[in-house]
Image (cartoon, rainbow, N blue to C red; front, side):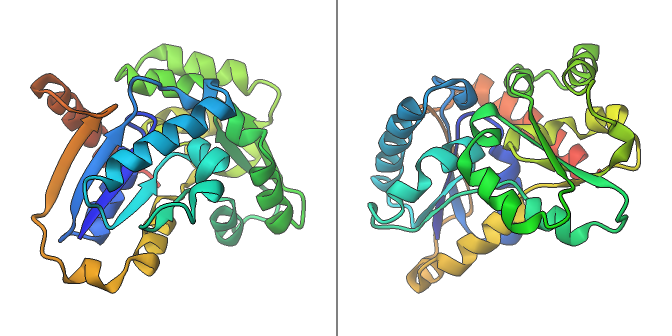
Length: 261
């Protein structure tokens, strides 16, 4: 089977990381729209245009399904394109349901963070209203984390300073879970632990997204014997050797981060 995973940048590599574990025999195309990242600072109309163009590009390459591994793009465009294309289109949503389900301390709260478009969108408000019966969920955008990730900046003290400044009005000791509602944010678990405390837990939508992909894949996709591996594209062009090496750095960082609960 041939699966396309598409994100505004390199955040969706965390979805690819999960997909390769759950679908080890699949061939993957990974598309990072580096020309237009970050999506969280674009208009909804601009993002819809990017999504339509990229979906056409990926489907022209014979994929069996596309994962929009970007919460921002999903919140803007997935619904209107769901029945437009000849293959399943799977989107993402912040893992608020998962965090609520897994919460053990009834005195603690849940913190949801993502890009501004996701945080202030109706889709997230509706999701929280469905599952937050006891009004324990707070939310706040952290758009600069996308820029830190795209610069391969994982260890700078500037990251902790940014988080403390943005979250200064929250009692950070009062949270049990942080919901990482942007795939770029998975790179910064150590920094979240620094500011929220070492006992904080994380929830992201990656595993649930791949499970949904597996539910909607057509049977013939499983019958095809493609060559396992990944082909990478940056805004419609194959990556060069330098970019391939940089992608490896991101994957190594993710391997480290996914050992942190």
